[in-house]
Image 1 (cartoon, one colour):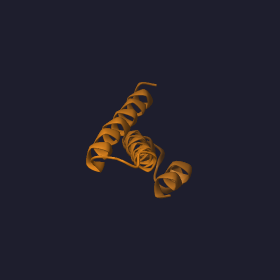
Image 2: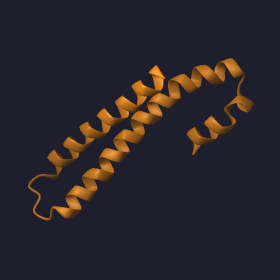
Image 3: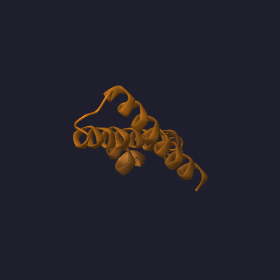
Length: 81
């Protein structure tokens, strides 16, 4: 909520130049965080469907890496564009 509030009303809280600099730092981090959360959601879905899972840690690790990769790709796309 704090990140969303900052992106909506950030220019009212800080001056325009500071807002742009903070946004360039905060947005890629937020996209990486969203990718990690997507990986967690996918891991929970996979564990829920697979009743005979051998090791939950391996599943969480696999989807953590997938989610982090997705977040990094989104962050790089945001930075480039």
